[in-house]
Figure 1 (tube, rainbow, N blue to C red):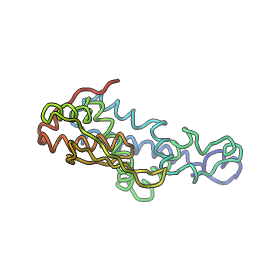
Figure 2: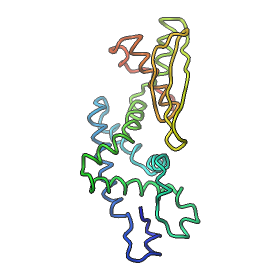
Figure 3: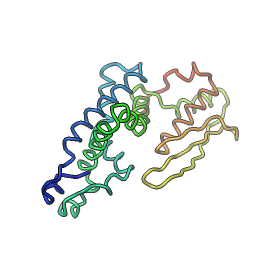
Figure 4: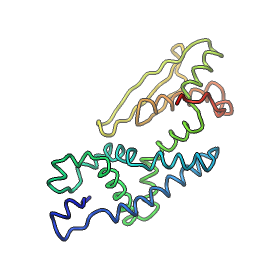
Length: 215
């Protein structure tokens, strides 16, 4: 967790930059593998877009922040005073260093599991957008067509601010059709809508691409 600014003030310590290099490679491998194995409808171009959308400083910094990585960093006094614990570049690099450290300590499978648990859901969400499936819109159209009604969502949340989990329940005329969880309200509602589509239309119809999400 040692940033180079800390090492400059404490000679003899090694920064996390080499671990960052390893973690970046591991992260790219796991995301590529998840995308390739679980999203067979995506061509090479979309697979590349998906990997870029997941493996970038903004996305990694957001995840690092949710895991409270910033509070564990060793920073130089100047960097710490300048808000280094919240800087996008420092957080994303530190998260990659953690992945690299896990790979060295527990092996490639442990690192794979770490990335899959914390990033797999984001890969799935972005893949859904890339193929143009908006489950909420599709469910609304299906319900209007078959039940002549509209779906309603009820949201609950649990966990601390840095690691909240949301749960959504979708009902039509008071009847629960599906529920789902996610790291955001949008993810939870999409998961609930997907489950409701499967319950209403059967799995085959639920897999038919729905209207594309607006850009």
